[in-house]
Length: 263
Image (cartoon, rainbow, N blue to C red):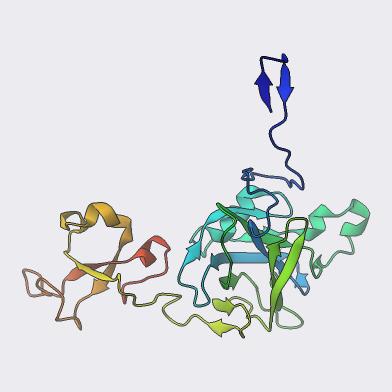
């Protein structure tokens, strides 16, 4: 609302419906189709549902990541953010039993199919999510189903009044990285955990701040690489005492926490 001096009263500008608990980005795109995407457990998650990391991508190969404000249907914004903070040591945990009446908590076994939802509120509504990268925080059991993970996940797209199903993947691993392309079977990310050699991969000096493009890229876009098998890199691969030296390769993957010293 805004104050109108002519009428000495408040005038309505926008009304936001279907709010949930926690932080939400209330813009002109609110409730518009395609402004929010989420995943939902489509099978039982025993003991609750844990997601160590979830990333949304705009292309089928999971190369162009979509960013926004994470949310969950339990309204815990801080918990939702832990599901997409580039740190696999933290996790989003949906405690579906805690949300039920006290009389039903004693017989609750976890998150039943469709009870938990984790998603992203996008900056604009012109994005189409076509790929996911996901690692659950499941714990295998000696007998019975694993804890804190689900074998089936569904991608949802906000349709303006409710979420519409986009695609469902089955037989998901308990606690391993997996790439989920819309319309495709799941596939493992491999040892690179999503790293791909792109044309933008550049050589830099051992001191990123001395690079001409360091200001544009930022030191957070650099990752250490062992140069023992990379003789073509600029500069010496040996230190002053003849020992193996380390140089820098600039990459956006460092910022996403996807690379290690072998990349």
